[in-house]
Image 1 (cartoon, rainbow, N blue to C red):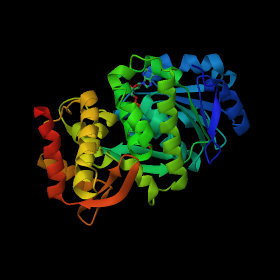
Image 2 (image 1 turned 45 degrees about the vertical axis):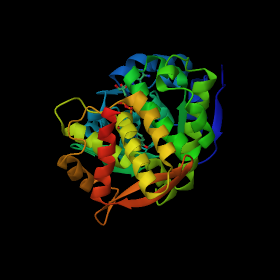
Image 3 (image 1 turned 180 degrees about the vertical axis):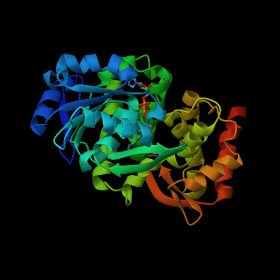
Length: 369
Ligand SMILES: NC(=O)c1ccc[n+]([C@@H]2O[C@H](COP(=O)([O-])OP(=O)(O)OC[C@H]3O[C@@H](n4cnc5c(N)ncnc54)[C@H](O)[C@@H]3O)[C@@H](O)[C@H]2O)c1
């Protein structure tokens, strides 16, 4: 199936989505009339994604390429400094345009770099991972990590445009596809009960066997993009409504931070969020009336695709330590986004440490299910 590129929002940031959306790069870049275009890539997106955009865009062929390391470790202040120096040595000025070609790491890092360089330059996100397309590239939140603590320094700096083409997903490794799929599950759980019912017919493992331009993929992807954008537009600076997007993230971020400091390889963002959503479903049942049946359905749908996180100390004291640093902590209570039922999120529900521990015990008991 083909969806030709179309603008699915006319808000602060135009978002172009479709199987031929890459043809819009020149139009969008031309409208911004930049002096110099710079493309931020990592090793993988330079290899797999840059050739695709070069085929479709004349302006990209003339751009300077900046390559950074791949993966979460790239989201550091040191690395942002290196990129600022590269921009400076290429002669980038306030009218230059940065194109972030990559997953959530590249859009978070590139957006951060663009926000700081010469007090702010324009940038376009071209997300190449499922996480980037469904979530990270949309909404103007940019950040780098401080040590093992996630997203501690950042800016709100909206992209001048976002171009989303499912074509890139063909080369995305399956673990990253699975990780991004967690944000699609989240979007449907917080905003679209009908899509949630339809999604239950397709496990992640059945979805990976479908082409990325099939109607199922295009429907869920577009729904996630529209959901994220609608929420962001209604509350850009996360004063209230935007917090619904944090469903699964209070504990998800903590699991991720914990694994960044551990001996094993870091847990992927979406895998951590998947585990966080199971805990959030448990807490939603205890605190805001999510039915036991819905809690079980959500748990088993997520658990069958993600299994158990490879972290030893999911319920240990280190986790509580990480949680105390979390930006969602308020008056020694942890703030959660929960759902009363699929499609009906509630924000700012506080939980004490005992309640959090119970949710972690529930999650840990799943290995024995
Ligand atoms: N700002 C936000 O609103 C927001 C929202 C969600 C997540 N995030 C952030 O996003 C990050 C995770 O994003 P991610 O999962 O995309 O990770 P990522 O950017 O590290 O990409 C995953 C891996 O896939 C590779 N890759 C990307 N596209 C590819 C392609 N088309 N073909 C082959 N390889 C490809 C990358 O090089 C990397 O190795 C986290 O840092 C998270 O905090 C931000």
